[in-house]
Length: 369
Length: 200
Image (cartoon, rainbow over all chains, first blue to last red; front, side):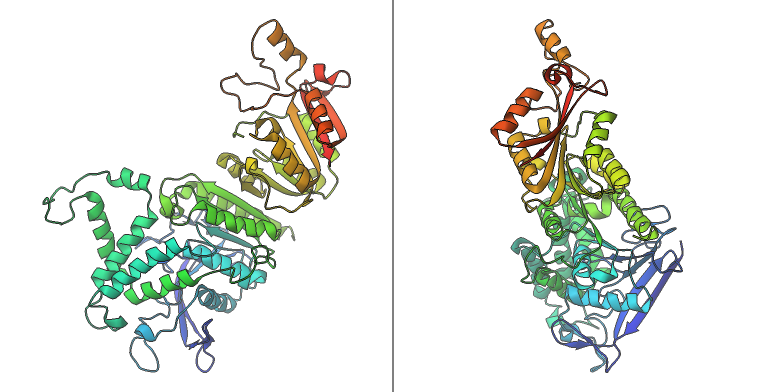
């Protein structure tokens, strides 16, 4: 598998990118990776969109990409056939411009001076990258969770630039419950004395707060059943009862995941990206039946039965909007006990659907559709 | 409805395909693994959409390149406007839904025409088994034992014809099948399967 890792810088002053908020941001850098080869007609490109804590490293080893079991030769996104692109979102901290990047006006990291970015801004930046790569029409846009929101945004903002769309385990807008979980995460970060209103770069980071935010996140990504299977009520080997260390295995796991996350993620990025997710509302005042009116792409919507963070009814709403707009749509609810994490873990069924769906899309194209 | 489906005979599919006009839009309720829809696309170039409750069957449909929703048709078709499709098909699913009256009403609303196919419970061999054997019948079109059948409603061809009259549903065409052949005489006695093209 040909694997290329690079960056793309654009929106250089005075041509800064105008954000949805009206603020300008530039220059802008996107870190992205590609897998497989772009064909001569540039008709085999698939854009993969990552979730809250993801990055451009979707596939490959050392370290393993976050969707490595989906992307590669012979896999769901078959890199022998397709050219797969994944870019870190703006607002992120894995190579793309975000609050930890240097503000050219001050020479210091942006911190909270970084403007509010939206899912729409993230997708707009991706569209610049696709222009830069010379791709007129993507074969597919695909992503789960926040990645799925970006898929919906692509469908609405650039319907002529996509041949198919695969939103997975996602929603057209967050419910109060979903916003509430994100808010607890943000509060944990902001309550950490090291956070210092976002000006912690070059000193101790708000590690405790960010770790707690990640712990809450992890609970919502799993399910009752998957946690029971993974941990039960088992104790850790070296526990000291009632010293409030990690006594149960589940406690040890959450602490481990929290502490690990801190090493690779920026707390301010967590604040900005969760806000972008909460503000996302693809309807934006429009009627359900009107939202996908311009969509000509084929759509595959996937949900998972045990996902209680993005329950199947939210995917069914997307399907309903597609139906009302007469969009050619397939909907499948995959049986899984993994909860929201299923989109990263329940790979066999998911990959099977995606592979066949993409076959149909690319054959349709080859037949002159 | 369950994911078990009576295996429709080849002639059953052929009659349905013959009834459907070239290039029509078709919604197949309980499309199973999508065999009929795939043939309709191939032979009549229809614009096809399936609805199916079984995840496994959905995988088969997607592998065939079909567009299909995983849904329970017993909850209705409220997302569709009146007359959204040229044809709505209820083949071998009609007797398996919980609310056949409601589902057929929805099918007739959403489709300009509706095609219904079901096993005839009063097929002669079934009558014999009941009368002489004293047992619930098992026939090629009703292949299940009483304890594992997906069929929830047992009706005859005459029952259905009377039902259509009562509901003021027009039967535009009908066909009766036994042993993979058409039956022309005494269908309520001699046909294993009834097929109807309806409109309202």
